[in-house]
Length: 88
Image 1 (cartoon, rainbow, N blue to C red):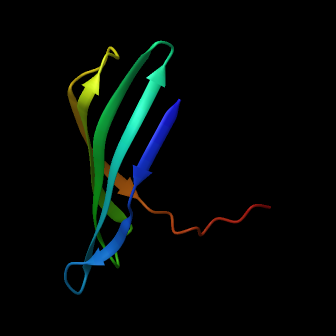
Image 2 (tube, one colour):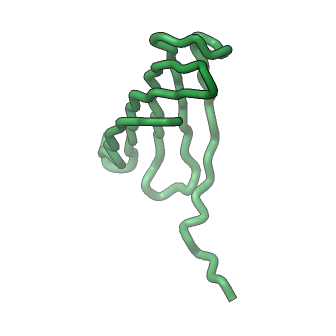
């Protein structure tokens, strides 16, 4: 079972050329007899005229008996294809 509450702050301008997207999330996860409560956030930094962006995801355990790390994070380099492909 997975239940989440999240808010999207999509493409907030941080200058003429750059934007920032924020997605905080609070979630509950249950697997078999184990469960946990977590908080996480995704942050994306991009540029309006560039298809490449950088994103960061962090997740922190609040209370859990699941076999998982207390804190995890990653950093990603993304490429936006811009939906230029069409199905034939």
